Amino acid sequence: MEDSNSLAISLFSEILMADQLARTRLGKALPKGMELSHFSVLNHLTRTGVERSPAQLAKAFHVTRGAMTNTLSKLEVAGYIHIRPDWDDARRKMVAISPAGRQARDAALASIVPLISEVVNELGGDRVRAALPILRELRVKLETTA
Image 1 (cartoon, one colour):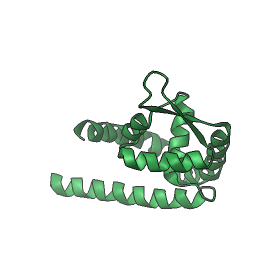
Image 2: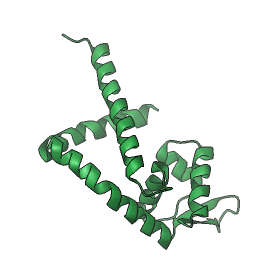
Image 3: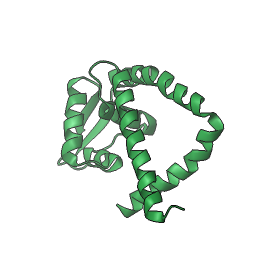
Image 4: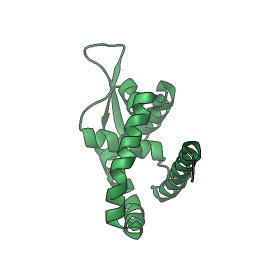
């Protein structure tokens, strides 16, 4: 019988390996020049539908402000986002997705949906639905202990 340490190591080993494989596969499927971090920010801005500060985005993605600034700079150069001063606090900036950013996000989504749908179909929708609550609970626990 496995002890709890061994079980924990097995669980996190599988999660980390699945994460690495998923990132590699999705990265290859994204349109040329788009990184997974770019897609993630564009997708977040599309889903929320509101402007965010770079600090809010960094917190949402659990990355440093410097890492987020780097990603946002690349997205701005590509024309995928607009960065403007915060009218209430000139020291802050606000980030919004541009129409070109929405198109890029939609194109990226179109390129990765077949890939992720294939994996879900192979695993079976019922099994994936059964796994989601456990994965969500694990994510919440990790967020609250970070």
